Image (cartoon, rainbow, N blue to C red; front, side, top):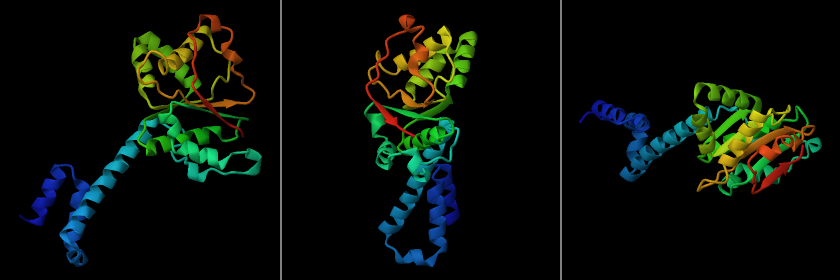
Length: 234
């Protein structure tokens, strides 16, 4: 069997990384000094890394992050921001997702809440979780349109299934009754009534904005149960 035919078969089996590494091994005489086990392990490692990287790329693309290059390693811990490095690193481990906890990013406009939210989204993707970023105003518009074209339940199912939902610009303006219902329907869908409740999200809100924006229609809303919230001051 020729080298070319072996590489062709590997590519047909979608083992392109193994094919590339095998080709490099056959070209470089130094690889001949390695044992079969060592060379075989290098082949497997190359394919494993390629698939892990491809999966990460897919997760990040699907997350639709506003800042896809954000990462916790680049966060600046200036004194006036009052960010606790230990807390950020703990959140980067994504244990809060498995523990069904929530994160609220609270601070003045322009303090970097969106960047931090996207960085946590990247961390979730790195740990193999699905994530979804969306601004709350865009979400409300999306659900309003979904009601009109009959895809409302499909959209709700998608937001219920994602491991980490990131809602940016939380309650910047007062909600209508229908908008408030949509928000709490998503919250309720991610907690009671399902066998494996998921963490609601990373919420980003300005200090000037209060949760009282939901007070007006509260009597007509389903109850909201939040198991745990982590506050990060800015």
